[in-house]
Every structure is written in structure tokens, then in C-alpha cells.
Image (tube, rainbow, N blue to C red):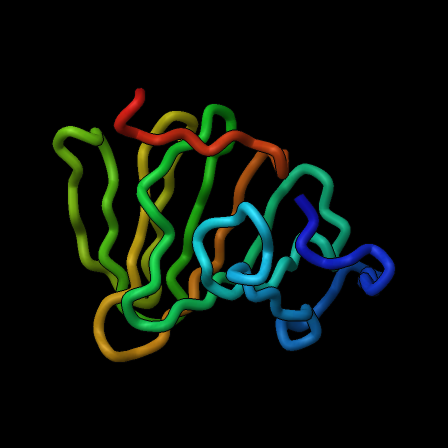
Length: 143
């Protein structure tokens, strides 16, 4: 799924871009997309074909809900803020609080989600492969 209208997309050439030059997208304005946070779709500007790369921006209390993917492996890096991670088995998930400088990952069928906690806004770099925008989101309670 592309978040930036192709007609408005200015792709970087060479593949170098500053995050401020990636137009932010408010996901609350995109139909059928959850969560309702803001992102900068770096992968679209750099015309990446095999890797998804998004900067996610959170206000306190905003979250990426508990979910899994059948094919995608994801790597996250906390840039700013404090996050409560929910990971693992849906019947017995593990909760961990992390801050800037923390990496966390989830492979195919591994349930995961994170919520921005505390009073500070948060930012997370999310990388995923393969970059299949139509990758199905799975409810971990149905695994």
C-alpha cells in the first residue's frame, strides 16, 4: 500500500533523503489503516522495492495494536519516548518497557504491539521485509 499519491511523490536521486523531506502521513486519514498515528514513508521516497521503512510518530497513549504477519519480519528502533511492548503468545504475552536506543523484532507469526507511555511523544523506525504492502495482518488470538 502506498501512502503518498504517486503524482505528488518526488523520489530521491541518488537514494539519500533527510527525514524532514519525507512528507508525513496521518494514518487516521487513510481508509482501512490501523493504527491512527503519523508516519513518514521513507521507503516510498527512496523507491525501495524489498524493504519497508517507516518513521512512526506517537503521542502519549497511541499504539500499534497487538498483531502478527504471515510473511513479514519486522525490526523496530526506538528513537524517542518510552514504549510498553506487548510480545509473544496471545494467551500469555510478555510486557516490557523500553526507551530510546532499544531495538525489538518480530518474525512471521510472532505477535507484537507497542504503546507510547509517559508524557513524551515517541518516534520509532520500523523496517520490514519483504516489503509486501498487502501483507495480511493476523489477530494473534486466532493463531
